[in-house]
Amino acid sequence: MIHPIPPGTRDVLPDEMRELRRLHLALIEVFEGHGYGEVATPAIEYDEVLAQGDGRAADTAYRFFDSSGDLLALRSDMTIPIARLVATRYAEAEMPLRLCYLANAYRAVRPQRGQMREFAQAGVELIGAPAPQGTAEVIEVLAAALDAAGLDRAVIGLGDADLYRQLLAEFGVEGEARESLLSRLAAHDLVGLEAELSELPGISDEQVATCIALSQLRGGKEVLDEARSLGGDAVERATARMGETLEELERRGASRRVQIDLGLLRDLGYYSGAILEVYDPALGHVLGGGGRYDGLMKRFGLDLPAAGFALYMERVHVAQLEEESPTGGSS
Amino acid sequence: MGRAKTEGPLKIAVPRGALLGETLDALDAVGIDTSEVRGESRSLIFPGQSITLVTMRPSDVPTYVEAGAADVGITGKDVLLEQHDRVVYELLDLGFGRCRMVLAGRVGDERLGESQRRLGMMRIATKYPRIAERHFERTGRQVEVIEVKGSVELAPLIGLADGIVDLVATGRTLEENDLEVREEILECTARFVANRVAHKLRAREVDGLAAKLRESLGR
Image 1: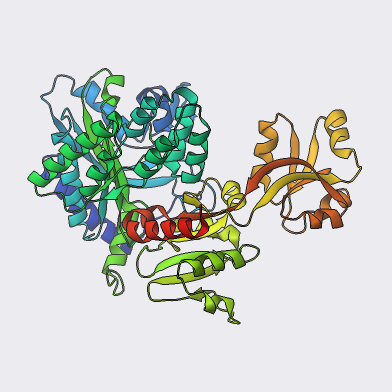
Image 2 (image 1 turned 90 degrees about the vertical axis):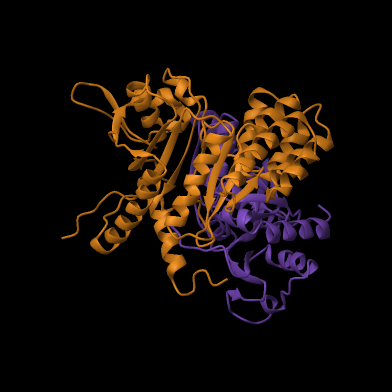
């Protein structure tokens, strides 16, 4: 008898489970080793509480009523539940607070794309530690986690979530036009970006060129200088923030994997300042991401800076297999 | 989830069909040898030292590039718009392969307007259901979009639909089937796209190729 399960979910059998378990243990050991205590929160929460974090970021795809008529939702990530937990239980605690998790989260999928509705994430949240030290610490833990997973070639992209918001404000672009341009930047639609920006009144060719050129700048420390040469206040501030984070990372000896990326923009609404993405040549998809979300805790009534990251466990596992295979890592 | 890698020779997804000739010309112009693809070979993959060409249907290009099975690719804007939820970076408008997405109806036939007036709704056959739906939504009209896979010109001729939304290059196919353009929806050209991870990890190669294409095509 064949009994179906919903698309985007899956069973894990013993061979895979053994390997996943090893990976889980290795990562939690790294997190614990850096002083991050593991927490678990319920997979279902009140929809209204999750939405408080950020309607757009929460993006809960599965909502339902319980027997008493309350609207519940399956969490779409762990950052918001942990913000909720910290505000509720650690309001008086000594900061910074270091927490980690390994948990399933749930999102909507587009059909026939191999996307998962239910997926495991491992990550950390550092609450109460501002940039640049807090950011550098999170990147250091992320780099150690990638070491532990055996992904020697993985790269951590470091960008800045405020750069284009501020740059466009500097150009005098506000409101709907700015949101539309930001979504073009997030999708990296350079053709659309150039066309839309050129059509705006009062935007010079030079400003269009600056915006396009910035979005293409990625590489080592030198790209910060290249960015600065393009000029402007927003660029100056963003490159200063990134430069400080990079310096702090160098001081900690944890800058090897970092690629500065001025074109990086994630569409999760709650990020501010540093944003992170993880890539590995063994896989065409992003392995994980994170960054700073200094405004998020305030939404739960505790005004504290925060940063963190999450890795998609299934993808890390696939990358691990590719790295171990005889052809992997040869080029 | 795909297992595609972004390593080895840079893999370029090359569209077969109407865009093939100009795509190969553009690649030749930046020093990529395309003679094998132009030859009699029935192969789909043409490996090289630093670059491998992979030929496929234009509508498959976003699929391969999104997964990283191809690092970069060339395809029409029509394809990208129809599959707008695919995550590929659109880096350059190549300018060739210019054509228009139009709403067309039978010559002298008022059925499009008639249906809209008397039934409040038009029936539109198309190979581009998402582009069509978005166009009518944006212009505040209700339509029933009927997706067909083959010759869409057939649909209004035998009463499947009141009109069609389709891509037109010269307009000859429309003319031959007694159809005429009623509205222009958008103009499409070929675009250079990249996989998100390849764009980060193979920055120099991807940027170099984009810059050379931009220069040689005068974009």
